[in-house]
Length: 313
Image 1 (cartoon, one colour):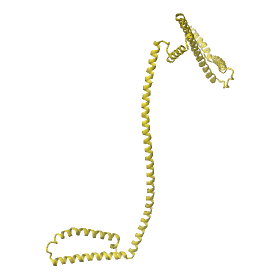
Image 2 (cartoon, helix red, strand yellow; image 1 turned 60 degrees about the horizontal axis):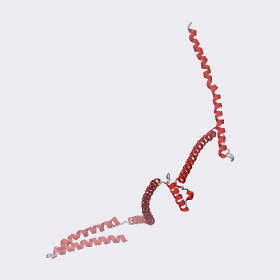
Image 3 (tube, helix red, strand yellow; image 1 turned 90 degrees about the horizontal axis):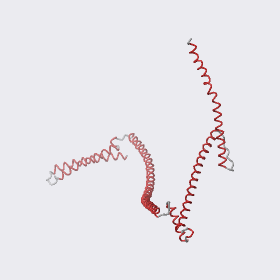
Image 4 (cartoon, helix red, strand yellow; image 1 turned 30 degrees about the vertical axis):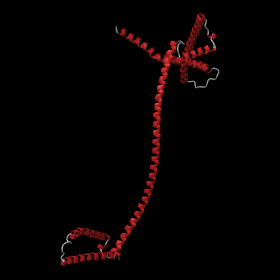
């Protein structure tokens, strides 16, 4: 008997869930309508603002869509806030002006009652002095024209003047340093330009020399090749004629070097011989040595002459 009692709440819960699931579908049109209404209000407000801004002039054409409407709406809101702030400032300034006028009238009446003094009774010189005093107070931004207000303002102005002079001196010093650096830089630039011109001139001269040397090198290479071919042809001709290898240039150079070496070897022998010249010579032995030397010398000269003659042939 308890089972039906437990099923009843379940049926009621299922009955409650069905409308809950249909709620979003029902709320969507309401949200769209609310959004459209808000957009229309913004468009109206933008139109009123543009009419106020341009006045009698025609409003420029623009594309009306949600994005442009939102941008113009934000601008109108900012403009409204700014106008409100400006209006408050103007009202405050008007109130202060009226207060200053009341205070001035009160002071004027006080002067008239106490000393019977009025600015209209002043002479032209007094009016000039009074205007100068007022202009000074305005320039120094003092609250009144009393001496207690002028002295601090003048002291502040003097301090500002001293600071300005000090700053001007610093700027002059920096300017002088900059001028010196600029002069040195200009001189250095001129020197560098002259050095560059000299370097370019030297480079062009060296390039011309290098080109000339290259041409000479080519000429010398050609001549060397020509001489090498001529020497090879002459050697082949001499070999064909049956020339002795000992008569070649290399052999003659070797013989010449050997002769020079022998001459160098005879130098210490001659010095040694000079030490024996003071002694009594053995005539027969001396004659034999002289004859041997002469024969050896004649043999070398004959051999050298023979080889030279064969080279000339």
